[in-house]
Figure 1 (cartoon, rainbow, N blue to C red):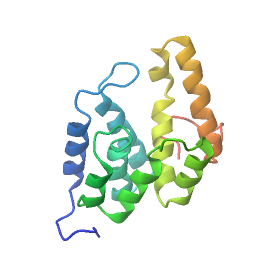
Figure 2 (figure 1 turned 90 degrees about the vertical axis):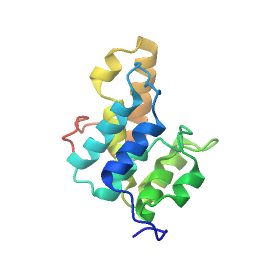
Figure 3 (figure 1 turned 30 degrees about the vertical axis):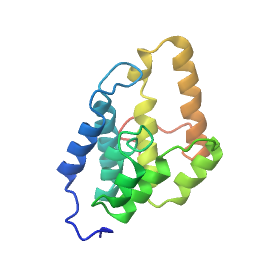
Figure 4 (figure 1 turned 180 degrees about the vertical axis):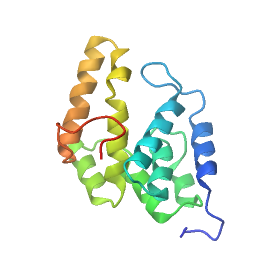
Length: 162
């Protein structure tokens, strides 16, 4: 159910919107940012995520990266749950990692999206192309966040982890 009377965006429309919003952006390795969005959406699907979570995966960085505004999200023809997940995984200025993790854990459906995001971010193949100091910093950052989220450090990082 959406907050608007408009027809909800279809999965294909959400994907297209996310790809357009992030067009021209690249990740730290210089790859098109849409590859990350696609990998996170696939990671959510592979972990048993539902349509709301998959839509949130496509949009998980849109507000944080200023690709789409929070007002756009509020008014979008998306479920309340999708919107809540996107807002939960959107980092806010001045908040601690612990505060961020608590919000993710407290929002139904958000932990799975964040787990898929971290799994792709921490993929050894992605990290391998970065310089050593960046690779080390990010590896520690992702491990710390997994611990704060209660995901543990001994779980596989690939898309099949669950």
